[in-house]
Image (cartoon, rainbow, N blue to C red; front, side):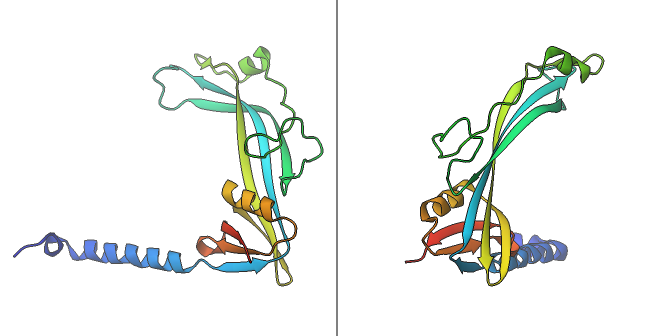
Length: 177
């Protein structure tokens, strides 16, 4: 009786088992931390971008140029100095819009035979969580869901943080009851 497993080469079997082992190690390399001292930040950014390409409808490798950009750091959901817009539907505050690139600025970056799109205003968000672990301060990247949990808990609740793979990110924040 020939099964698919019997038809696999030794290298393929070794590769499959290596992959399973790596997944198992990754899953077990996460940990949790309990802390009473923490700060969640959300950096909100506006950036003007222009796409340049030789054939706008069929170019597989267009070139993107960024122009002016403005950012604002939200701390624990509080209105930051310099906030012009917000809070939005996600509870975030935003900076003033950066100056839109002029046609002269767009054309200065244009290469021969390229066409430029109309400048597009991009919005982005970047989240981090700083916390105290013993006598050490750590700052790790996180996501919107964790940011919101920390904002709701701030400043008085103890949090249990679940760290991601290799303890290089915060994947979850839960109030300790």
